[in-house]
Amino acid sequence: MQQGVYYFLGLAVGMGLIVQVGMNSTLRSHLGSPIVAALVSFLVGSAALAAYVILLRTPLPARAQVALVPAWAWLGGLLGAFYVASSVIVGPRLGAATLLALVVLGQLVTSLLVDHYGWLGFPPHPLSLARVAGGILLFAGVLLITR
Image (cartoon, rainbow, N blue to C red; front, side, top):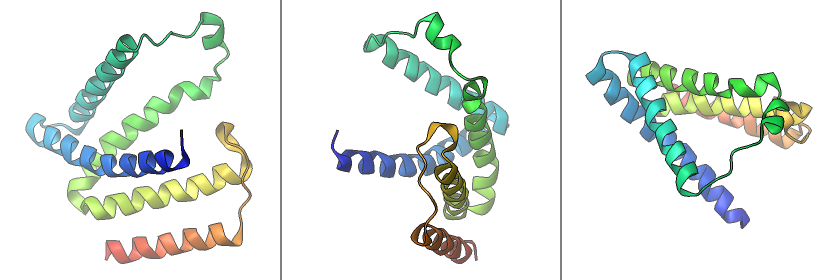
């Protein structure tokens, strides 16, 4: 794939996150529970992924391959559930822009640490003055958006 496609996908994911918050918040208001709304969201997403795997005939990993996965790697879904449930609660109270600004700031700070130390299987990318300055500028943007 060309580099531009990756940038487009990254942008599309960011756009989709806010649309997802709106959809899940609507589910919450109709279903009466942020947790039930998050569960429905995950069930629909799981069904879509299962259909994708079946339609594309994606081979499932062998048992030996599954056994090699580190225990911590299986817990990513918990963070997804935390994000969806929390965004359904926080989004309607703070607004889409404030929620996204805080989410992006949290992602950036965490990604700078993960990149610097090469955690979670990412290749190391040491902190630089430019990266730290970018984080500070993003933090300033969050302050402006949340006012």
